[in-house]
Amino acid sequence: MKVHDAITGRLREFVERQPMFFVATAPSGPEGHVNVSPKGMAGTFAVLGEHEVAYLDFRGSGAETAAHLADNGRITIMFCAFEGPPNIVRLHGTGRVVPLTDPAFPALLAHFPDAPDTHGARAVVLIDVHRVSDSCGYSVPQMAFQGDRDTLLRWSERRSPSNLADYRRKKNTTSIDGLPAFHD
Image (cartoon, rainbow, N blue to C red; front, side, top):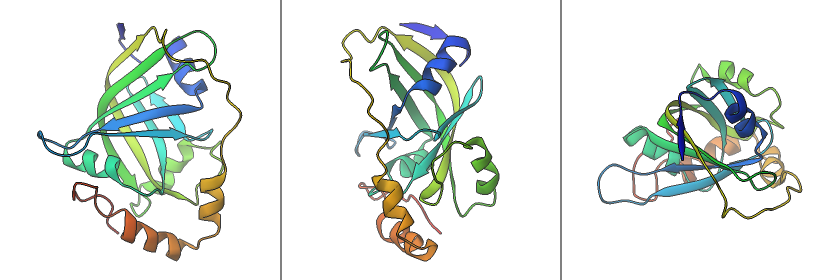
Protein backbone atom coordinates (compact mmCIF):
# COMPACT_ATOMS: atom_id res chain seq x y z
CA MET A 1 0.00 0.00 0.00
CA LYS A 2 1.16 3.51 -0.77
CA VAL A 3 -0.18 6.71 0.81
CA HIS A 4 -0.32 9.74 -1.49
CA ASP A 5 -0.29 13.48 -0.77
CA ALA A 6 -3.31 14.26 -2.94
CA ILE A 7 -5.76 13.08 -5.60
CA THR A 8 -3.70 14.03 -8.65
CA GLY A 9 -2.26 12.57 -11.83
CA ARG A 10 -2.82 8.87 -12.38
CA LEU A 11 -4.89 8.50 -9.18
CA ARG A 12 -7.32 11.19 -10.30
CA GLU A 13 -7.53 9.68 -13.78
CA PHE A 14 -8.15 6.25 -12.26
CA VAL A 15 -11.01 7.29 -9.96
CA GLU A 16 -12.68 9.40 -12.65
CA ARG A 17 -12.60 6.44 -15.05
CA GLN A 18 -14.25 3.91 -12.73
CA PRO A 19 -17.93 3.13 -13.40
CA MET A 20 -18.48 1.97 -9.82
CA PHE A 21 -17.30 2.83 -6.32
CA PHE A 22 -18.15 1.83 -2.78
CA VAL A 23 -19.07 4.10 0.13
CA ALA A 24 -18.39 2.94 3.71
CA THR A 25 -19.68 4.61 6.88
CA ALA A 26 -20.50 3.61 10.44
CA PRO A 27 -22.27 5.14 13.43
CA SER A 28 -20.31 6.28 16.49
CA GLY A 29 -19.62 3.81 19.26
CA PRO A 30 -19.58 0.02 19.36
CA GLU A 31 -23.27 -0.45 18.52
CA GLY A 32 -24.98 -0.02 15.17
CA HIS A 33 -24.38 -1.32 11.70
CA VAL A 34 -21.43 -0.60 9.43
CA ASN A 35 -22.75 0.27 5.99
CA VAL A 36 -21.18 -0.28 2.57
CA SER A 37 -23.07 0.98 -0.48
CA PRO A 38 -22.23 0.47 -4.14
CA LYS A 39 -22.54 3.61 -6.25
CA GLY A 40 -22.33 4.23 -9.95
CA MET A 41 -23.79 5.89 -13.05
CA ALA A 42 -21.57 7.89 -15.33
CA GLY A 43 -21.19 11.52 -14.41
CA THR A 44 -22.22 11.19 -10.75
CA PHE A 45 -18.74 11.37 -9.13
CA ALA A 46 -16.50 14.44 -9.27
CA VAL A 47 -13.02 15.30 -8.07
CA LEU A 48 -13.37 18.91 -6.91
CA GLY A 49 -9.77 19.37 -5.82
CA GLU A 50 -6.68 17.59 -4.55
CA HIS A 51 -8.45 16.83 -1.25
CA GLU A 52 -12.14 17.14 -2.08
CA VAL A 53 -14.58 14.91 -3.93
CA ALA A 54 -18.35 14.75 -4.28
CA TYR A 55 -21.00 12.42 -5.58
CA LEU A 56 -24.69 12.65 -6.40
CA ASP A 57 -26.77 10.67 -3.94
CA PHE A 58 -29.95 9.23 -5.42
CA ARG A 59 -33.07 8.13 -3.60
CA GLY A 60 -32.88 4.62 -2.33
CA SER A 61 -34.40 2.33 0.21
CA GLY A 62 -32.12 3.52 3.00
CA ALA A 63 -30.33 6.55 4.35
CA GLU A 64 -27.39 5.06 6.21
CA THR A 65 -24.70 7.30 4.72
CA ALA A 66 -26.62 10.49 5.50
CA ALA A 67 -27.34 9.36 9.06
CA HIS A 68 -23.76 8.28 9.73
CA LEU A 69 -22.30 11.48 8.31
CA ALA A 70 -24.63 13.54 10.49
CA ASP A 71 -23.54 11.43 13.47
CA ASN A 72 -19.75 11.55 13.04
CA GLY A 73 -18.76 12.56 9.49
CA ARG A 74 -16.48 9.54 8.87
CA ILE A 75 -16.48 8.11 5.35
CA THR A 76 -14.30 6.04 3.05
CA ILE A 77 -14.71 5.77 -0.72
CA MET A 78 -13.15 2.76 -2.47
CA PHE A 79 -12.55 2.24 -6.19
CA CYS A 80 -11.49 -1.13 -7.68
CA ALA A 81 -10.07 -1.84 -11.12
CA PHE A 82 -12.27 -4.56 -12.57
CA GLU A 83 -10.69 -4.02 -16.01
CA GLY A 84 -7.07 -3.31 -16.90
CA PRO A 85 -4.17 -3.39 -14.44
CA PRO A 86 -5.13 -4.29 -10.85
CA ASN A 87 -5.55 -1.37 -8.46
CA ILE A 88 -7.57 -0.27 -5.44
CA VAL A 89 -7.82 3.37 -4.36
CA ARG A 90 -9.24 4.44 -1.02
CA LEU A 91 -10.21 7.99 -0.09
CA HIS A 92 -10.62 8.45 3.68
CA GLY A 93 -12.21 11.61 4.96
CA THR A 94 -15.05 13.47 6.51
CA GLY A 95 -18.23 14.15 4.66
CA ARG A 96 -21.41 16.09 4.78
CA VAL A 97 -24.69 15.75 2.97
CA VAL A 98 -26.22 18.69 1.11
CA PRO A 99 -29.87 17.71 0.53
CA LEU A 100 -31.88 18.94 -2.43
CA THR A 101 -33.80 21.19 -0.03
CA ASP A 102 -30.60 23.11 0.85
CA PRO A 103 -30.15 26.42 -1.03
CA ALA A 104 -26.58 25.32 -1.94
CA PHE A 105 -27.81 22.20 -3.79
CA PRO A 106 -28.52 23.78 -7.22
CA ALA A 107 -25.01 25.29 -7.42
CA LEU A 108 -23.43 21.94 -6.50
CA LEU A 109 -25.19 20.27 -9.44
CA ALA A 110 -22.83 22.23 -11.72
CA HIS A 111 -20.10 19.74 -10.73
CA PHE A 112 -22.06 16.97 -12.48
CA PRO A 113 -22.65 18.21 -16.05
CA ASP A 114 -22.49 14.66 -17.44
CA ALA A 115 -24.97 13.11 -15.00
CA PRO A 116 -27.69 11.26 -16.91
CA ASP A 117 -30.45 12.94 -14.90
CA THR A 118 -30.68 14.75 -11.59
CA HIS A 119 -34.46 14.45 -11.04
CA GLY A 120 -33.95 11.45 -8.74
CA ALA A 121 -31.05 12.96 -6.78
CA ARG A 122 -31.79 13.60 -3.12
CA ALA A 123 -28.42 15.12 -2.16
CA VAL A 124 -24.81 15.82 -2.98
CA VAL A 125 -22.29 14.22 -0.64
CA LEU A 126 -19.18 16.40 -0.19
CA ILE A 127 -16.04 14.76 1.19
CA ASP A 128 -12.90 16.40 2.55
CA VAL A 129 -10.25 13.76 1.91
CA HIS A 130 -7.47 13.51 4.49
CA ARG A 131 -5.91 10.20 3.39
CA VAL A 132 -5.38 8.91 -0.15
CA SER A 133 -3.98 5.43 -0.67
CA ASP A 134 -3.74 2.77 -3.30
CA SER A 135 -2.90 -0.91 -3.14
CA CYS A 136 -2.35 -3.79 -5.53
CA GLY A 137 -5.83 -5.19 -6.06
CA TYR A 138 -4.35 -8.50 -7.22
CA SER A 139 -7.32 -10.51 -5.92
CA VAL A 140 -10.03 -8.27 -7.43
CA PRO A 141 -11.68 -10.22 -10.27
CA GLN A 142 -11.64 -8.99 -13.83
CA MET A 143 -15.11 -8.14 -15.07
CA ALA A 144 -16.33 -6.39 -18.19
CA PHE A 145 -18.47 -3.28 -17.79
CA GLN A 146 -21.62 -3.63 -19.89
CA GLY A 147 -23.21 -0.28 -19.11
CA ASP A 148 -25.09 1.70 -16.51
CA ARG A 149 -28.50 0.50 -15.37
CA ASP A 150 -31.31 2.94 -16.02
CA THR A 151 -33.78 1.37 -13.57
CA LEU A 152 -33.38 4.05 -10.89
CA LEU A 153 -33.67 6.83 -13.46
CA ARG A 154 -36.84 5.33 -14.95
CA TRP A 155 -38.27 4.85 -11.43
CA SER A 156 -37.75 8.50 -10.49
CA GLU A 157 -38.95 9.82 -13.87
CA ARG A 158 -42.37 8.26 -13.17
CA ARG A 159 -42.73 10.30 -9.97
CA SER A 160 -43.49 13.94 -9.39
CA PRO A 161 -41.36 16.06 -7.04
CA SER A 162 -44.17 15.72 -4.49
CA ASN A 163 -44.15 11.91 -4.80
CA LEU A 164 -40.37 11.86 -4.39
CA ALA A 165 -40.59 14.06 -1.28
CA ASP A 166 -43.21 11.69 0.18
CA TYR A 167 -40.94 8.72 -0.53
CA ARG A 168 -38.02 10.48 1.19
CA ARG A 169 -40.19 11.23 4.24
CA LYS A 170 -41.39 7.61 4.45
CA LYS A 171 -38.14 5.77 3.68
CA ASN A 172 -35.22 8.13 4.36
CA THR A 173 -35.82 9.95 7.65
CA THR A 174 -33.86 7.50 9.84
CA SER A 175 -31.19 4.84 9.49
CA ILE A 176 -31.76 1.17 10.29
CA ASP A 177 -30.32 1.96 13.74
CA GLY A 178 -32.78 4.83 14.26
CA LEU A 179 -30.32 7.69 13.65
CA PRO A 180 -31.81 10.79 11.98
CA ALA A 181 -31.06 11.11 8.26
CA PHE A 182 -33.05 13.26 5.80
CA HIS A 183 -35.51 15.87 7.03
CA ASP A 184 -37.40 18.30 4.85
